[in-house]
Length: 410
Image 1 (cartoon, rainbow, N blue to C red):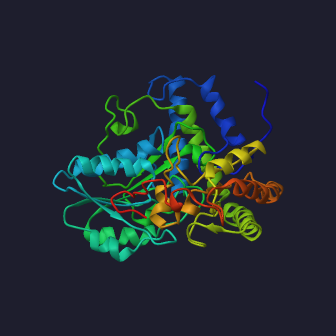
Image 2 (cartoon, rainbow, N blue to C red; image 1 turned 135 degrees about the vertical axis):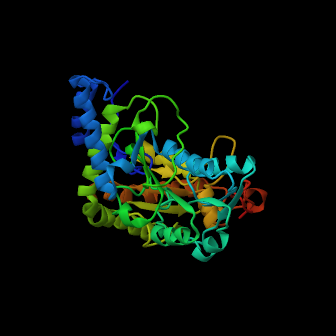
Image 3 (cartoon, rainbow, N blue to C red; image 1 turned 30 degrees about the horizontal axis):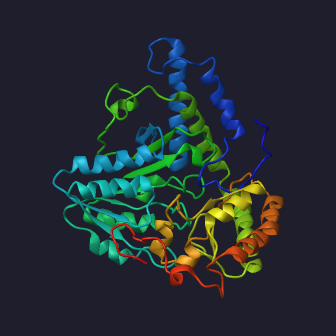
């Protein structure tokens, strides 16, 4: 297979490149340092010390104690472990509170629990993706086992007021979990004061490899592992540790912490330049999500009358990588559940593109996207049956079901 040219990569909320410094630290674990960290001999013991250092690095980046970090295989496992722990530790409590804009790693678990007889309150969001904290306050009950609210939305980047949410939960004695997969490394965190009980993160979102994650468990919060076996992770997660990736995660968190100022200045400025340029040069385009209360690397823009998948295909021909805000699959025209929850009109929701930057993006790359996108959108609109003045099929009705979790339709 012929090598592909270096892509213009604007899909960092999907996954990130492994940082060279991270790769350098993990390679010895794949070659010379193959000992088992649980072994009694010195050959394994040196690997055990690297495990301890990785835990210390992750804890330092989050502002917590190393003993509060459990290594996992990914963010989804971390989320599942947190929800499983909360409901298993509180068998008499059959109520959960979460939002309609969660990642499937939480959303599908909540729906599964709902089928098993749990009562789930699905919090809505406004047109900018923000929660109503009074609605959350009213939702809390004596039998609420857990509140799960993502730290930042993966599609729009909208950040939720976790400290305020934690205060409400603490007031009612309710456990709080947050999926922080998109937020760790992009916004400062101090878990010693934030007040959450569980926090999930994933390595490949912050320049470590895929297949490693971590779960923060506040000291005193219940943990009920669903992977049983050996004593690894102090009996909290069985299975021989994925040492190369754990060492990589520790280094990646250390680097992300060091670059967090750059993320919130230079990267934010690049994101704003891209967003402003697209909105100014392309008519009938809109930003989805809050203008300020969001991750510094993320913008989600909808282009009216075109399909996101078609946009991505034409971008791909130019080597530009991004994601569609639409979850359309073959034979289905389902738009993103997040955009549906925001009430984005279907003529916009189907043409949504998420651009997510990293510290490796450059101004020249942004300028290339700004130069190419107007022509792509104009070309697709010329073929669109929904374009202005065209006779829309079925009178312009949405072809999807547009149902949102736990709620009605838009």
